[in-house]
Structure formats: C-alpha cells, structure tokens
Length: 333
Image (cartoon, rainbow, N blue to C red; front, side, top):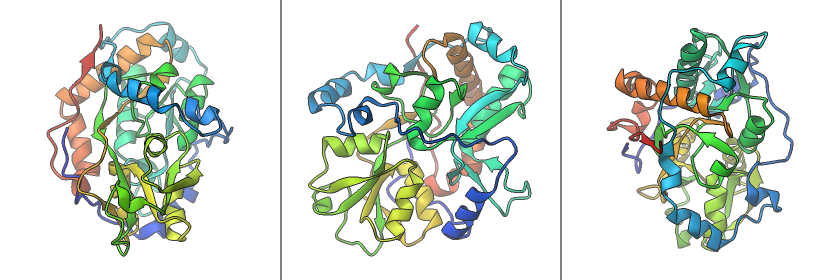
C-alpha cells in the first residue's frame, strides 16, 4: 500500500484539549494496564541501549521474517477453544485510546466517547469472526511499552495498536500478516525551519520517542548527533513534550504523526517521505497458531469484501490520501 505521506495531514477536531478530554473519559469495557517498566524488547531490557548495530544490520537483511505469517484457516484450535470456554465470552484486545483516527475517544461523537477508529474497526471484525458478535469484546488501553508484556502475561488475547512487525518482536510474539503500510518520520514545529527531516538537521536537537518503539530503535542506530535521551512510555506523550518546549522534535510512525499534526496545527511532518517502510500487524501470544490463522482469515476477508477500504476511507483517507489497498498478504506455509 502506498500513500501520499509527505504532505499528508488529518483534519483537526478541536485540538489537544479535546483529545485530553477524550482520553479522560472512562468506558465500562476499557481497562488500563499498569506500567510494569518492562518494554518486552531486548534493547530496553538492557538499560535502553538497544541491540548492537551488527545485530540490527543482520535483522535488516532478513526481510522474509517481516511480512510472512501462517495461512488463514476458519478452524478453532486450542487457543480459541480456551477463549470460548471463559466465563465471559469476549475477545480481550489491547488497543490505544488516544491515537487520533486509529483508536481514540471523540467527546463530540454521538456514541458518547466510545472507542473508535481504524484499529477498533479491525478488532471488532475479529470479535465477530470468533464470537459471532462485534460487541463481544473488551478493550484494554495499553501504552506503547506494554504491548508485548500484556500479550506474554495473558492480560490480552491480542494487540491491535499500530504495532509494527519486525524480526526482534517476532522472537516474543506472533503476528498476523501486515494490514497497513507506514514508516518512521520526524514531527516538529512548523516554525522549526532548520529541521528538515531525518538527517543532519537533527544535530544538537532534543528528539523524543517512545520506549519499545521502532522510532527509538532507529534513533539508536543513527541519530545524526541528536540528543535522544528523552523517552516516554506512550508515544502521544512525545507530542506533549514537544508542545511544552522540552524537546525539539519527535520521531514516530508517519501515520500517527499525521494524526498528531491534526491535533496541533502548529506542528508538521518533516521530510518528503518516511525513512523506513513498515507494516502494522495484529500481535498474539507465541505459539497460538490457530488464533493467528483465524485472524489472517479475517484479514483476507477484510481485503476481499472491501471492509478494509471502507474503514480506511472513513478514518484515514482525509489525511493520508488515496491508497492502492493494504499490503499484500505473505504466507510461509
């Protein structure tokens, strides 16, 4: 899938104040997980220093692990049977509740601040496939650095939260096929004309990223002389740091950055294109093959019945423009 990212912007909906109010609203089916201080990534487990450049380079060459997943299947297996045997027969999904147009609460919505967005639509599709009801779902709001721990501990069945598939994460969790293409990009104030993108213009600048994010991994590999010591548990916190003047720029997914630019029209994406190419996937516990195959069936149907395109047009088209569709599914068996 390709988008016109360089100049993409999402339309605003009342600024950060409205978003703050939205995040403060509490839903009966949304439970926030505690911050355990464990990112679930090996870089952060070693005091935030990240893996070695040599290891990262080797992973970069192993492109086949990024996009391949198990072939779709409609059959129940041990993982799904266990889920259906629970007293409360609902899908438990880790999501974001403050990423505009992905997973967020609009206080002006007729639904009264109910979670909505592109990722929320997909999560409901999965719930309908497994439990026969789009509302048979419990949303648990989790910060960026708790996505993998929440899966490994069994607090959620899966995470549908703009989570990039990569080789390092595949050591900890299993992924569906990719359902959205994005990439890392720099977000900075419009008045910061001296910052032009992910390049030498970052030298001496304070750059924020989220712990456990691809952005931090990329900055640890190459930071162009920037100060990257400012890290936060949740990616949206970087925008707040930027607004407070505590940092000069943020590095994050271009799709998320476009949403943040919509929340605050004083900031913008820098650089014509993202400097990486990544795919979001649905993350699940390692070894839950039947669940992975079932989710891939949902995604296959979602592509074919125009469900993906309808959701994209509703939530993201206004800011990211026309696209050719989701990434092509790649299967390994």
